Image 1: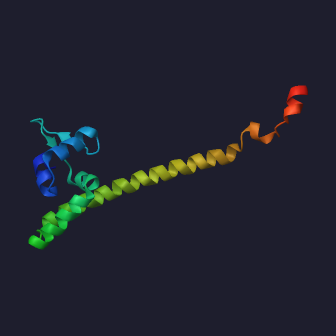
Image 2: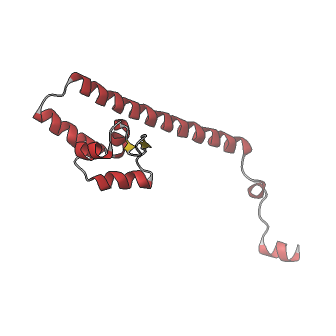
Image 3: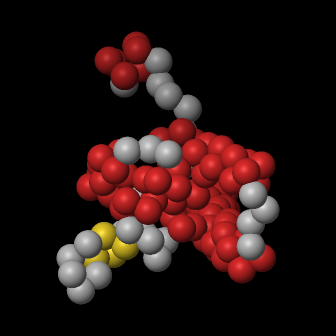
Length: 124
């Protein structure tokens, strides 16, 4: 978990951008005992993928990352991908269930009966 300042420095964006994302609900963060926001690095990579990718290539060119840092970053990225995969799987299952219910129910009764013409309805 990292602070807003650390997140902004890592992504090379302003602290207000990170805070605005938290307040709008795009980025989830928890408050620590002191009341400061703490952000999961995987969440940052999910919300700011372009900035995270830019930062990763820049840091790799500057100096090789320590294996522990690389492992932590990849673990966080993997967790984000797993979360996204689970959400997509759940959405797929909901759409499949809805399609089955609609297929079983068939068309509404109003569509089954042929509609009468204007004269038949008036003089019927």
